[in-house]
Structure formats: C-alpha cells, structure tokens
Amino acid sequence: MGVFEAQVLFATITSLIVLAVRRALKHARPLTPPGPGGLPLVGNLFDFPTSDPCLAASKWRKEYGDITYLNIMGMGIVYLHTAEVAKELLVKRGAVYSDRPPLIMATELCGYEPGALRSYGDRLRRQRALMERALGMMTIPTYHPLLEVETGNLLHQLVSSPGDYCQHITRYAGALSLLVVYGHRVTANDDEMLVLAKDCLELLCNEVMAAPPKGIWAVDVFPFLKNIPDWIPFASFKRKAAKWRIQISDFYNRPFAEVKRKMAESIATPSFCSILLQDEHGSMSAQKEYDIKWAANTILTGSIDTISTVIQHLLLLMVLYPDSFAKAREELDIVVKDRMPTFADRPSLPNSECVLSEILRLSCPIPLGLPHCLREDDVYNKYFIPKGTVVIANILAMTRDEELFPDPEIFNPERYGLTIDEATRKARDPRQWIFGFGRRRCPGIHLMESSVWLAMVAIIATLNVTKAVNANGKVVEPEVKFENMVFRIPNKFQCEIKPRSEQHAALISNTRLNLVP
Ligand code: HEM
Image (tube, rainbow, N blue to C red; front, side):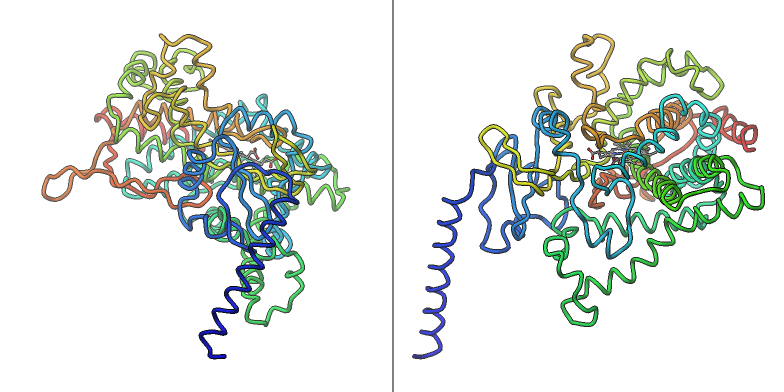
C-alpha cells in the first residue's frame, strides 16, 4: 500500500472512531446548556479568541440565548448572559456556585494565593471578615481625609503633566490602597511598592490568569502535569512559573514585611495590617498572619485596576460627550462655587450621581467578573451542569441590555435623571451587576463609591478634558482600544487636560499645598 492510501485509510478509521465516540457520548451524556460544538479531545479550545474575550461572549449570547456551555479538553465552562440567570444560579444557589476554579498554575506553581482565588470555605470566610473591617461602610469615612489628599495630588499631577495621565491615575488608585492597607505613603509615580504592584498585576492579568483560553493552562485541566520535571521541552509552563513565583512573592511579602519592620521600630502609620497585627499583642499564630497578609494583598489587587478603569473612562467620556457633563458641572458650580467639592456636598449633587451611575455602567471594569465554580452537579431548567464547571457571568452583556438601556453604547446620564421614576432608576442601577454576585460579591464597593465619586466631582468641577489638537490644528479623535484580558481599562488615548480657568488652576495648587501632610 502506498503512502497516500495509508493516509486515507488512517484518516477514514480515525473519523469513524471519532464519530462513534461522539455519538456514544451524545447518548450517554445528560443535556448540557447549548453552545458551539467543539472538536474531539480539545473541545472548544479554538472557539476562544486570543484577544477581547467579551466579543466572543457577546456572539455566543446572540447565537445560544441566556446561557452557553463550552468545554476545553473536557473542562466545562458556562457563560451566564443575563442578570436573571446570574441571580438564580450565583445568588440563590450560592451554596453550590461560590467556589473558584482550582487555578493550579496561579496558586500551586506561581505561589499566588489571595482570598479572591480561594474556594468558599473557612479560610476565605476569615479573610472576608478581615476585609470587612477595612472596607465596611462604617470604616470608609475614616479614609475621607486621605481621599481628599490623594484627589488633590491627582488633580495637580493631571495639570502638571497631562500626557502621563495613565500613570497619575494608577498612582492615585495604588496610593490609596497602599496607604489604607500597609500605611505606605506613595510620593512619586516610580515608588518602589507601586511599581511592584503594577508590574505584578500586569503579569497576573495578561499572563498567569488571563481570560480563557490564554489563562487556562494545561496543568489546570490535567493536574498531574504539575509533577513533570521542569527540564522536559513540554514543561515550559513550569519554567515560567518558577520565574514568575519570585516576582509574585515580592508582591505579597515585601509591603507586609515593611509594615512589620516599621512596627518594630515604632514608626508605622496606622493601617489595615498594623492595626490587625497589633490586636494580637505579639502572639500571632501562623494562620492569622497568613490571613492578614493575603487579605491585605487581595485588597491591593482588587482596587488598583478597577478604580483606574473607572477614572480613565471618566476622562474618555468627558472627551467624547462634553455636553452630557453640563448639568453635573452647573450643579457643582452652584453648590461648591470657588472651593473643592467635599463629601459633605454629596447629597446636594444629584446630577453627579446620574453621571457616576452611567460611568460605572459603561466602564464595566471587570466585564466577565471573576470565575465561579460548581461544588456539586446541578440542573438548571432542563440543563445539566456538572460539578467543577467554571461559571462566568457576562456582566458586560447585562450592562448593555437594550430593553433597560436603549442605545446601550451611548453615554447618557439622563437614564437615571430626576424625571425617571424610582423603580426604573433602581432597575437600571449598574451596581447590581458590576460587582459580581452572591457570596463572592466585591467587598470593595464602599471604598470605590467614595474614592471614585470624589475624584469624579473634583475633575468635573476643575478640569476641561477635550479632544487633542495636532500640530496642524486638526482635532484628533481618541482611539479607543481595550487590551487588558481581565479589566476593561482603555488603552492610552490622546486628549487635552487643562484647568477650566486661572481661578481653577489656583484652586488646584492651593488645595494641594493645604492638604499635603
Ligand atoms: C468599580 C470598582 C470595582 C468593581 C467593578 C469590582 C468588581 C468586582 C467583581 C466583578 C468581583 C468578582 C465577584 C464575583 O466573584 O462574583 C470582585 C471581587 C473582589 N473585589 Fe472588587 N471591584 C471594584 C473595586 C474593588 C475595590 C476598590 C476593592 C478593594 C478595596 C475590591 C476588592 C475585591 C475583592 C477582595 C474581591 C474578591 C472577593 C472574593 O473572591 O470573595 N474591588 N470585584
């Protein structure tokens, strides 16, 4: 038999086997939710795009309805595209749907073990209780003075070097959490702890835990692979993990060690870590220290890119929709006149609430949430969802629901305006989706509400953010791109940032001088 005939025979036999196995599986397996049919063995591996995971999710929603099932090499992945299904499964059936998938690459191989990646159990409950102490609604007012200082710094920096606005915003978000969590004061954009956190977050979001398929490592699907020797050619993931482990260890150990050193020298600024460490009066158990260290790192990780995403969207939307900010600005001019807005002004600024809600909706900082995982088999409607299935809430789709939000991609704060009835306004509140669902819902909501609100009203009150004009006097349209695989943070776009007037410029520099401790 010639080579060609042998190949044809081989291909025919293989196809027959595949068909037979598929048919057998189809009859043997209970009905899973609808989704694209995959290839043998690899399943839907090639259905996932390598960039913009939200695009694929939105296509599946159109094709398969409220819920989509895919599998990668046998591991089930379910997308929930509507708030109704997400509430039914993630909230009402929270006892089954609140685990995280076991990310062996991230946790065991790279040594990254924050609360946000933990299964739902005692350790997570302990860490969430600690976070509640730092982030609960009653604690947030103690951070108001700090938020005012950092907002003053942010305005000053935006005016001093507007071209570096992305760095200034990252610094603002990072400085807040480094001070709240570790008592570490950031005084420059290249602050050592800030750079450490920023670089590590980039590594985690775009490599170690990127959205599928990039962030699903073979070892996550076939855990026995963690034991193969590092040197064999196929084990490049182990060599990468060994390198990343060092950077990740610095990320959670260094700021914590710094607090302990400062406490030993009695020079620590009060912070989440120092207060909890002090509570133990020197008799700290290893478990308690572990919990504090990881709860601290989880807060830092959770806050930087989310807060940055919202503030970068604010600038983008000011550029694209200047008229939609007019009402909020007029109201600010009347209420705060020639000073900076403060938290005491908030009840008198209803139009700024409409703007904030619409920015939160459009920015949708974590568009596919964080993955949940099923602890037991479950049945939803007629569909079987096996234990261990990864569940992804398509939050972006919920914030773009055309029935609730006509022209959903348009920025329109009037959706929440004073003429809208209370029930509709409530139904449209993006906070019910963008922070996730059930027992894993984001614990940082109150810090976000205060920090983003203050930064937003201070920016609207004092700055003009407009389209850039090039050397030929031509207006440059901002190029809007999203490349981060977890956060919907816009890539840097061109814009002009200037104080609204000489008086506003003076207000910004005076505020900063008065506030800097
Ligand atoms: C606009 C800002 C923010 C948004 C949109 C946001 C969104 C989310 C989402 C979608 C989740 C996943 C929830 C789930 O699994 O169902 C989450 C988890 C989390 N967020 Fe946020 N977040 C924001 C700000 C913050 C801030 C400021 C902090 C800390 C100060 C924070 C800390 C956390 C933590 C610790 C978790 C993990 C909770 C767990 O796994 O149990 N977030 N967040």
